[in-house]
Image (cartoon, rainbow, N blue to C red; front, side, top):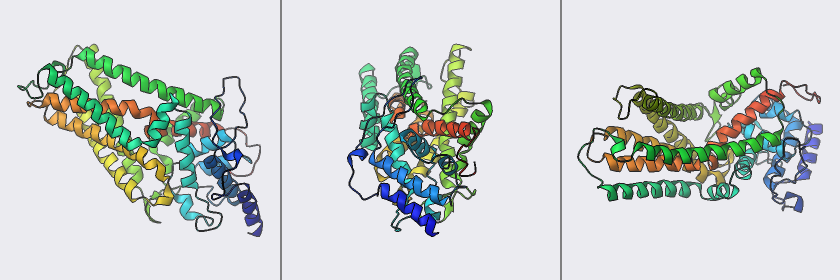
Length: 409
């Protein structure tokens, strides 16, 4: 134990959480690596330096090695560069198990807090790899306000467009949305927004992937990473009992609410895809009957997107401050609120599609959906993309020889 504490104190001496930032800790921009480039020893930010300090202490302890993928991945390294820290931070699922098990957690003088320090670096990666960078910084600082303002502004614009075209209230149109907004107009408008979001996310994750230098992916590695991501394997706390949220008690609700949210979103996406096939391949135009496949998929997805985000928002308010980064809460809550409002307005539109306020409900719903698409690359949605990339890197890495042989895989 004395030897362990000596190693931990040596790691702590490199940087302490309360020390003033040195020039080496000043924030530096990420250097994007080309295909033939080699990683550079970039200067670390203060948050990255703190994660490096924490990982050096954890590497001397190894008590949490079986909790999640972060700790066996950690044992393959003696030093932690910027790319390593970004990778490990996104591999962390913030379950909180290591914080509650750690003998060096606050109020110990080492102040080891893996979930909080990882969360801060994770948020930094969303900004560092964002494209265009200015939008990532803006959303980071004003996530909740920007989300609601964007949704409100777009909804108001569409409401005014409906008002100028003929009025917000009308004779029932039997759910014919295209009588309000022509199909080609909607397809162009949302196609451009969705295409931009996918481009921005693609550029960001490509930059991240090149910098972490994962190596070649085998079919087995891809299958394992997909399995772990879809099951949210590492939200079980490493023992199957779940996360620690407000106290030492384990709960699986965070994992369950994530599943409601993710699969609700995917069902809504599937409904859109099926409706597109109906329109272009079968020549069947909306509105579709209540028992049709697109409507059933969309309804099930909307219900999931009511339950999941509501539960996640509840847990977000209850969670202990040491379990994450307080600066992320506006970003987290902004994304959660947009998901919730998307499903709530969608169900309201379904319920009122045969009434005289259908145009008003449609304009509000479309405004919220467009705001969700616009903010996808810069908010909490990005964590799913980067975390999946980190899981794939871990699946690749664990199949490679461990030259250090300092811990089990």
